Image 1 (cartoon, rainbow, N blue to C red):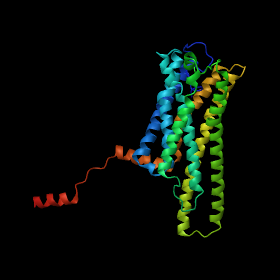
Image 2: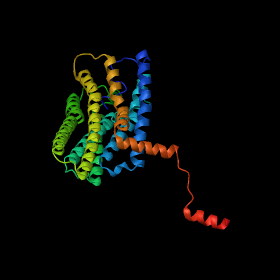
Image 3: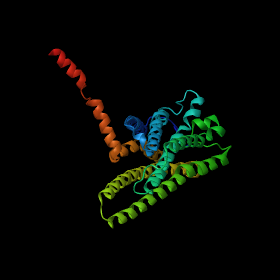
Image 4: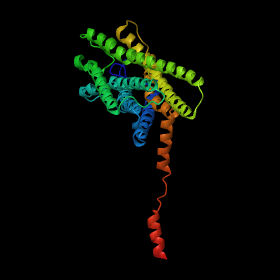
Length: 333
């Protein structure tokens, strides 16, 4: 994030390649490859296998895109900063790279919140439910998510000096009030607090609804139609559970670094660089965890992946149409 995924947010005074820096560079490099491969594959599966027929895959696609772009555009600046704190050839580049962390982080958590709300709308409908959010509304909501994320990411570059922008762990003393308001009312409120409340309330309600229906179904005869509806609902509940875990992991991965940065920026105590490195790695790891969890625990995505790979590596042999085959045999006769 602009204030979090910085190239120099640690209190280190030099860019000497220490042993810890070498390990950090190696881990982040591996993370970039993993996140790019996993999220790129997830985006391909969703588009190629036409999973966008279901509304919640719009938001999963948005999540995978933000994770992919984070690994492509933001994490490499942290790696470069470990080689040389003055890695940028021009201050202009910092005006582009500094907001990217907030942009992609906010887009990820907003997409997860939208998934939670959509899952609640689906689960709370009757047993013969369908997606209650129209596709055009989902597309509009996605546009709002990315526009809102951009609006959340831009403000610091409007008041910070260019030296502070390229040292994005540093705040502007001249605009200290703006820094405090931005950090706590914008970042903490919109990236952590509100999404955490939205996801928690949505998934708790989903659980309560699921428990109510389970009790209701157990008290009735399992007619064939009801049995099919029950299986469909249980399948959707499993998908909701996976998404709830992904939302929870996002908060767990990002919250420690938020806390460390808050203490570092506005507290009087010193934070050891080792905590920055550990929590920075944990936060960035989230970009690689999301596609891994979806491939492992989302049956629909897993089946779509297997089918796509089978079509790529085991292409069926072309068959001669029956009409052409008959014509060929008749000519031979």
